[in-house]
Amino acid sequence: MVDWIRPARHASLFYYAVGDGQLENGLSLSSVAVLLAVALALFAANVLAFDRLDVH
Image 1 (cartoon, rainbow, N blue to C red):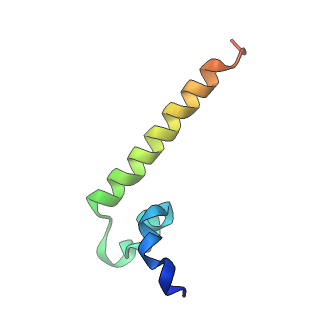
Image 2: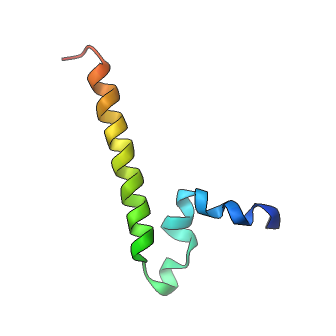
């Protein structure tokens, strides 16, 4: 593919989900930690944004 963008692959969530050879090597603890951290951060941002709405 494009070699100059290869160092930026760690910035993509797809790398941690399917790009690190999880089918061959199994899921690594660091990949799970990154995906869970991003999911929790997005959930927290969603809760904070929803609290600002006047829908209660």
